[in-house]
Image 1 (spheres, rainbow, N blue to C red):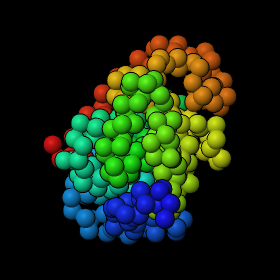
Image 2 (image 1 turned 90 degrees about the vertical axis):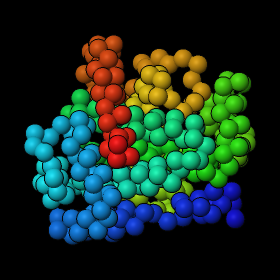
Image 3 (image 1 turned 60 degrees about the vertical axis):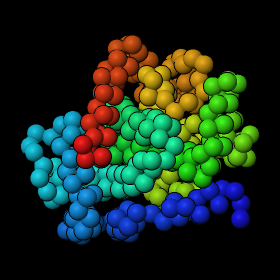
Image 4 (image 1 turned 135 degrees about the vertical axis):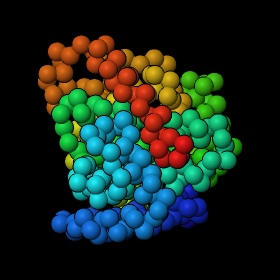
Length: 291
């Protein structure tokens, strides 16, 4: 068995959370019945509560209070809610299962992940695009390969982080030196094993180099820009940047190609507004953790 296979097949990554698996089955049908979706979600009472909290959080700023899954479907739309369920069920499962595991590193990991999801969603809103929440879920799960590596060998991954800090290495280089693979490769294998939708799989597999994305370059660039901004604002997971010039980032350059009007943006004002949205990440984590 290859190392990447042993990383993901000898632990709980081998199987998706049941609700996520059922959601993926529903997604195979282009015409999802909202009653089927409601039944799948409501069969998992803890997940139902989390989703209602998330739907009522500042992330979505709905005008009316949402009390049921059917209300959430009507308010947010069936396609968006389907992807939210997929992401939240995966995110919350691993969040809860790792509470006592390498506590300090994991706390940083979940904070960075939630912040990246929130900022990616905020960028999408500013650009007036609709990616059916793939940008949000892609942000939440983009570093899932790191999570697998952490849970496989926390001691070795601590050495990765030490090399990043002490030797000025980028995280992917330090991972390859110690594990022989990096977290994007592990993430890509997890996507294949779980049969995740292509937009989400590309966001996870190519987030460090969005230009390599095949069909979802714009989406992946948004996730990457959010990722880098969160590193810059201190919600980091030690990627290894010495300094960050947003205008030189691959993701920024890709988005400027898609949106020429970004050339006229006041970058300072743009990022300041995003940093304000970034504060909503705490509300999201509270919703997921039930605080």
